[in-house]
Image (cartoon, rainbow, N blue to C red):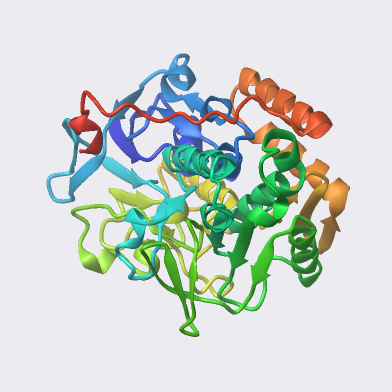
Length: 421
C-alpha cells in the first residue's frame, strides 16, 4: 500500500484526504495546527463576532471513523525529493507520494519589516491577536484624557481592498457606528478613524462593477474612509508613507493586501513560480516529479489561457483541485484534466450589507447578505459549530451586542520555544 503525505489541512488538504481511497493508500496529514479552520470568517474573530472554536474543527475528530488516515503535528522544515522524506519540527516522515496543500501566507511585497509592525487576519492566531489589539485601543482610548492622543489610539488603517479588507473594514465601521455609543460611552464616533486603502482603482476587483459600487457605498454608510489608487510604501514608528510621499499616523495597521504561496523548504527554485507558488501541470503534478509530487490549492500555480497568472487563491479552486486529484489517484491514471468551474464570489460589509456574483447575476443588500450567511454556515464543519455561529449571528443581528469582546492577553511564562519551531 502506497503512503501519501499531505502537507496542509486547509480546504485543499481536507477535501483530498476525505476523497482518497483508504483501501488503496495510507494517508498521512501534516499540519502545524491540530484543526481545520474556516478562513472566510477570520475577520469575525478579529472583530469579536465569533471565537476561534466556532469555526475550527479538530483533525482527530474528523479522522476517528476513517481507516488508514493519521495526523502528525509539525511545521515543515525540509523536503528531500530524492530520499522521499519530509522533515518537520519533530520527526522525519517517508512517503511514496507527496501532496503540497499548505496554502498561502501574507505577501508584504518586499517590505520585510512589516510582519513585525502590522496585524493580520490570515490565520486564527493572527485574527485573535488582531482582536486583542483592537479592543486594547478602544479600552485605552476610553480612559485617555487627551483628545488628540485618543484620536491617535483609535486610528485604524486597513491595507487591501479585496474581500478580507472590505469585510474587516466593514466590521470596524459597525463598531464605530453602532457599538461605540452602547459599550464605550466615553468615546464619540469622531474619535475613531477607519481608513481602507487600495492600490487599484476599485474595491473587490474580481467582482462586477455593480458589486464594487455597492461595497463602496456600504463602507461609506459605515463611516469608513476609502482611498483608491493609493499605495503604501512604508510603515515605521506608527507613520505610514504613501506612494505620493505623504505621511500619516495610524496606531493600528491591518494588512490584507496580498498573499503568496507558503514557503516549502527544500524545493528546488525551478519548481517555484510567480508569487511563491509551486508550478503544476493540468493534473496538479509538479513537472519532473509527475509520479511522486503534487500541489493543490493556493500554493499551486497552474497557468491556463483563462488564468494566465494561475487560479484565484480562494476556497473553490482548492476544493475542486483536491477532488480532481483524488479522482485521478484513485483511478491510478491521470485521465481527468482540471477545469475550474467558477461558482461565484461574495463579500459582506456588515449587517444587511453584502454583495454577491453568481454566474452573470449580481446581488446586493439584504438578499446577498442572507445568501452569504447560508453558504458560509453550510460550509463550516461540525453541527455544534454551525449552531454556535448561527446563534451568535442571530443575537448580534437583533441586539448588536456580544459577550465575545474579551481582551485575552497571553501569559509570558513559561516560554514554549518549541511552538515557534
